[in-house]
Structure formats: structure tokens, C-alpha cells
Image (cartoon, chains in turn cyan, orange):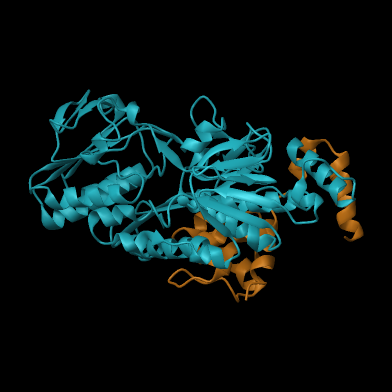
Length: 425
Length: 100
């Protein structure tokens, strides 16, 4: 909050015509210039809500691709009940909202001089910078794995060509083969994601290659919505999925792309398809700009998501260390709104409200079987972001006459439509 | 800027940062905007999740209270509603009632 107070004083000074040095846009009477890096869930939400909360702001969104392909619902492309086009979002809606979308890759940030350098050498100056680069995969975290090896053993943890590669491998897999998924330790993008993936892969295999098996080799001893997933695996695909926890030897020691094997304490297993989800860290630009802690993720002020490493910089989404909040699309969307409100207030010389934080993660086990986890959060400068007690949690263990699994499957689809409209439409 | 806001800003300057942080809760607008994750931008959902835009304040307060106390069965809303105080539910409803 100290940063906020200082910014408040500075801005108040500028508004009173005291000529505060180093705030060029504000000194010229403009509302302020904000640069956002990354047009995913976090960055695009922030850009959009900055304009919505103050249309006079100059907002530039830097993105290296022409469109964004969401990780949420990419498991359904792998399983074959969604197309890649269904999860691809262009940026026309963002442009119509008055956002200057710039194609390029942010390669350096000068936090003292307040500018971002792009791959082509162009420089963008800012009053406030939002860094939302998502994740970088740590290929070296799994011995034998590499970016090249991912062409044979896909991670499919960044949606796009990798998603389609895993889909093709699944289609080519012989009936009776083993699909191996190697799951990382915490923290990582989308905690229920690996378990949703094996669920919908099992649904595909049950309907197309019923003699096949799925083996999950996990670095962890527990996972998101575990009770619900395991009960669903038992009822929907009995005997098909085996999950090996870290303490039972599930932590992967190495992979061999040539031999198509995975070595762990569980043994040396051969897979027909091997899906390696390696450990992760904040996206490359956050690493390059020194915005990360020793663990590779970005520490932030829990009240505003201001970087703990640099002034006038905010971190949104998977890259941030957000206390109890998981790295999810919903979290990134909600955090983007918090950062937008904080920046708008600070640039206007107003007090910043406490953040409103919430997360919702829906997962499908089959197209007609949905489960969810949700939490509401509280933030404080000393305790960070913590789960609001006596609220939140997972779907009911035993469905009632409401037919919760079917309803939540429908809500999963509606959630995707709503959140993607909120961001990119 | 009215007198009340000026007093709040002045108080913010005079108060120690930690105290200030604890005395300013999330606004109704900020909390309501988190609803859009499922209920759609500006509360306009394509369904089957209920649209919020156009709902009167009293209706929202009643539904949220019934979810919170489990008088109305639901899937996820019971779990979410329990995360908000009665005052916060009123603040959320105040803002949502402005959505057309």
C-alpha cells in the first residue's frame, strides 16, 4: 500500500500543476499511458477493463501472435469434441474497444526509464506496465525432455500446434496401447488440467479404443478435485486409469523419446502416446526483466498485484505468485480487473479499493459430466491472499435430483462462452 | 469531488498504510465484475447460466441470501455466496441492478 500512497501523492501533485518529473503523459494532461504485455486471459482482460473504467487512457497491448488459443477447452480438442477454431480468439473486439494491439514480442523492459523493447527494436514508453506473459516451460526439469523432444512427446500445455499434435497421436494410437501422462509438482498452470485431460482422453478411448489404458505418473501426492475425479474414473471408465502418486514412485526420473519410455520409481514404462507436462515458471519476459523471485514466479503486492521487484509494473495471471489463488483462466480474468481498477485509481489520484478475488475451475470428465471447484479470497498486506473461510470448495460428492454433473457440464460450456466474451468478444 | 470523498482521501493520507488497507473493502462494482466470469460481460449470459442484467436489487439479495443459507439448492452458487457478508451482498446487488 505504500507504493499506492506515494503514487497518490505524486498524481495529486501533477493534478495541482506542481510539475512532477517523470510522468510525461500525465503532465501533458492525458489520462496516462499503459502498456500490457500478453493478450491471454490476464493481459487482455486488463487492457479491456482499463478502457472500460477510463476510456481516456492510452492502452497498448503487445502480443506476439495474431490470435490467442485458450488452454481451457484445449483438452476437448485433444479428445475430439471441440475444434481448434472453437478455442481461437482474434483481437478485433479488443481493437474495437479502443485498445492499440501491437504485434511483437517484448524482449526487454527498462523499469527505470519506463519503456518496453520489442523484437524489432521498437520501444514503447509507459506510465504503468502490466506484465501478463503466462508460463514458460522448464524442459530441463524432466531429464531427457526438450523442446525438440516435445515434437514426439507433446506437452500440449500451451494450446496450439502441440494440442493438435497430441490429438493426432491419440487418433493414431492402437487399441490396447498405453497413454502416459507425466504430471508436474506444484505450482503449475491449471491444477485440475492434467486430470481433466486423462478423463476426456479416457472418454475418447472408451468409445474408440476400449482395450487401451491410461497411466498418470505424478510428482505430487494429491491433486485438485481428486476425490471427484477418482470417483468419476471408477464409475465412467472402470479400470482404465491408474494414478501413481509421488510417494508411490510417480515422480518421473527421465524420459526417452526414441524408446518411447518413461522412467520413474514405478518402473520403466512404455507408452504408445506420452504426454509430458514439465515444470513451469513465469513467462520469459518476466525472467529477462528481473521480475521473478528465486522460484521463477513473480512476487506481487496482494492488494494491487503491483510487482514487488519494480515500480510502476503489475503482474497478472499465471506468472504471478497470488497466494491461495490457482493459476487459472478465471483467476487471471479476475486479477486483470483488480489491476485495471488499481491503475485507473492511482492514475486519477484516488484511493485503491481492496481487491475482489474469486476463482472458478470447471472440468469435464465426459461431455455430459462436469465438476467444479471455487473459492472466494481475501487479501491483506500482511497475510497475502487467503481463502475466505467457510465458503467455496468442490462439487457435491453424491449428486441429487438436481442432476449436478449434467448441470455443471452445461455450466462448463457457458463459463467458457461468458469468460471468452468478457475478454475477447 | 464532494466533501465526503475529500475527507476519505485526507484520512487515507493521515492514516498508517496498514490501517487504511484494512478499512477499504472491495467495492460493489469490483465484486460484481467477478460474476461476469460465468454470468457474462455486464451480466449478459447466453444461458443456461442465469443472466444478471436487468434483475432488480431485491431479487439479487434474496437469491444470494437463499444460496448462502442453503434454502435454495444449487451447484456452485451456494459455495460462492457463503464467501460474502450480508453487507457485501447488498453492495453487489446495488451495482448489478444498474446493469441494463
